[in-house]
Length: 341
Image 1: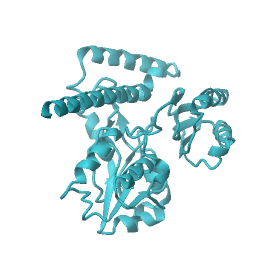
Image 2: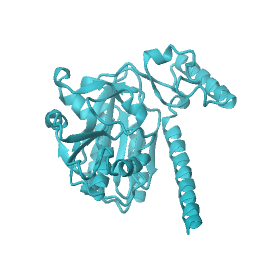
Image 3: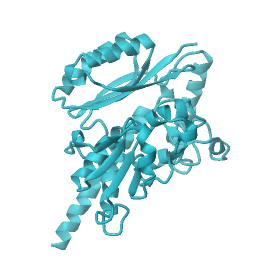
Image 4: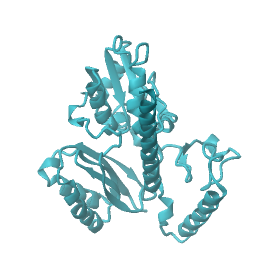
């Protein structure tokens, strides 16, 4: 049985030559049989990669050979039963975490709080605790007392902040003195706390290393975490000590599913689940059914079927749809402005 080392990494740093870094990184990854996804942008690098112990060490050593990434920090976990990714993609982006705010300087992020000090901070009644992740992630686990913004994508977070910053809102600037924010690995909080500071919130904190570092560091009996933590690979969720959780994932919409969800009449493996059954067309259902058939056949032959890993493509489609929606909203705002003149 193969053992795979999984490394999650990111660093906000000025990379004006990020496009030129793509091919060399891809080459080193291919030579060491590294799978996963790495995002490169002017603002830095972000990604999760998996491979053998030796392969991961060589990949990380290569990245850190660039003086700008010499202090690149990564978090590790392991998978003993199967590879969490089936290919490697090195992609060029405007942002390494898509917030729709490329001009926000994440190097101006909030105050780091180590996992050991996090419980005390979020137990302070004067602190507003905000989960910056998406609604489906929050749904399977979060910190006790944290606010769920109910966002479907990180792009919606700035709009939520604007709405809640109004008088009487959850982030009323006249009343809110301290804000503590957290996310899976820390990267979304780097950007979101920098955004909060740009909006006039001075005392903003975020969990260093994110939920994953907290679950790895804090014993369960002392933990304020409730539930499991969604992760963006085939493990789907993890618990304390980063032990793989009990959730599976709908291959149609990528929503995490509990055991109860899989007992629903609307759950058809590979085709639909209680969260998307009424949104899947007959054409899509037929396509998903065929994909699942090919995945099962490949598994029976002990082969890897690339259709088993649709996350990257679906995330990309979501981003494209969100970009279209944002353009439509901008056009509507322009129309409204013209109409009121």
